[in-house]
Every structure is written in C-alpha cells, then in structure tokens.
Length: 79
Image 1 (cartoon, rainbow, N blue to C red):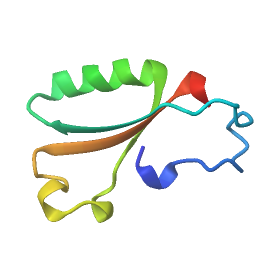
Image 2: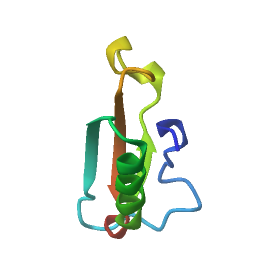
Image 3: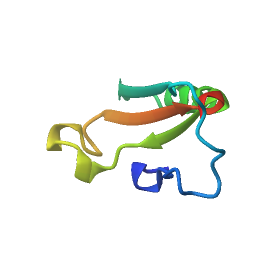
C-alpha cells in the first residue's frame, strides 16, 4: 500500500493507542531482485504494517524506476 493509505488514529480499523511508544521503521532499499524484494516484503508484513512512500514525496533520484524503494513500517503489536 502507498503511504497515502496510512491510517489515522480516527480510523475504525485501529485499536486504541497504547501507552508505549510505537516502533516505526523507515527502509530504503536498492532493488536488485524481484524474488528477494518480495520475500523481504512477505517477511516484514508478518510483524509490521508496511506502506510504500509514493513518488510525489520523493526526489526524482528515488522515484519509481530509479532502482530504489522506500517504505515506512509500523510494528503491529506496538499500536
């Protein structure tokens, strides 16, 4: 999913905010193999909600077709 679909606290699909600070991860990857990327994504999604940072939020050097992908992840048990 793109970051545009990142839910807000008002979204009905999220539980109430916990008292602890959530774990948030920003990942920048050089894309070399579709298989490696898809395996990383499947593994990451086991424990994290993952959003791709859309092109309009990135410099041209990091947009689609550059060979890089940027993602934001939120640990599922933390929120």
